[in-house]
Image (cartoon, rainbow, N blue to C red):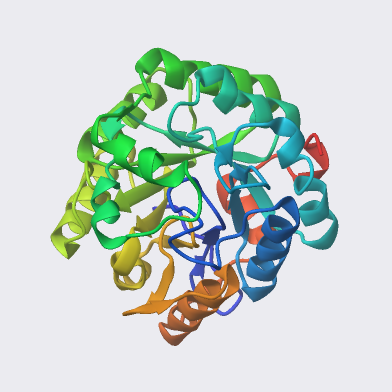
Length: 318
């Protein structure tokens, strides 16, 4: 894996914070950022705590459901840029029921330095959560969650290529390549071999989502070995995203092995066993403490830009 080191020779670790996402719903935690103001403040807090990259979805301010509306994104993107130097990363994954045009709308308007890019179609199950919740705040939540039992998240070869051409080739955006299983690494290698993507890749390996690879440390090792073989250690920046209770454990293992890490309320609503995280900044602070205890250095936003060869915050559309 390509790495950056400080003047003291310590490896720099990029912390990404995914502040709201489209997985969790308002009933699951009262701390989920919903309104543009809440998303902006959560992002600023995460950046101040040490996150170099902020990964963003938008939500309907009235009831918290995910929305692709670029106008909603534009209510928080400029505020984040004005108050932080963080790299802004906008989803192209969107949420259940969104079309490709929906998923492209905000990124094409914002022209960010970085976008997420799912590297394959998959089952993405959160329907089991309904067994734990008896009362829901909003009518949309339970059907939304239950729909994941019979829904395929679509990311075909042609869809992935469209994201790469329109955002990458069209606007200089680079990608957080989200790989939920081994086959996704091979799909990413295909686009690298075809010359549609170029190093350094930002490879986000994701563990513990029902429908993807599991959360065992051996799963992490298997993903790393496969990525090293497919891309070569100097051609990519590796990052770890683990869902739910696995977030900090696998992030710690990954950081010790050479990875960057992602935290945030999109991926887990907890800070520890049975304890809800009250903010994204709490999770960033916890993983930062772990990283520094491993004698590693937390990367700044400009470190991340150099490590990922991003175009710079002065070339975005917000």
